[in-house]
Image (tube, rainbow, N blue to C red; front, top):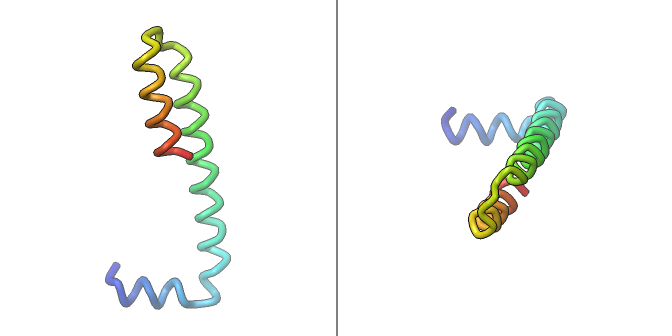
Amino acid sequence: MECENLKAFLGRSENKPLLRTTLERVGQMADTYHQAALTALHEIKNVELKRLLFRVTERILK
């Protein structure tokens, strides 16, 4: 989508409910992936690797 078209789309009040719903859904998806990543980290035995991956996970998905 071109920048001007995107600005017009975002500026239209009738699109606000769709945008809100989309942002809520993206937030839910991020939470789901965050929890899945943290769960997967429990399987890692190497403590240093686990710490590194935990920090990366927190930075990216939080």
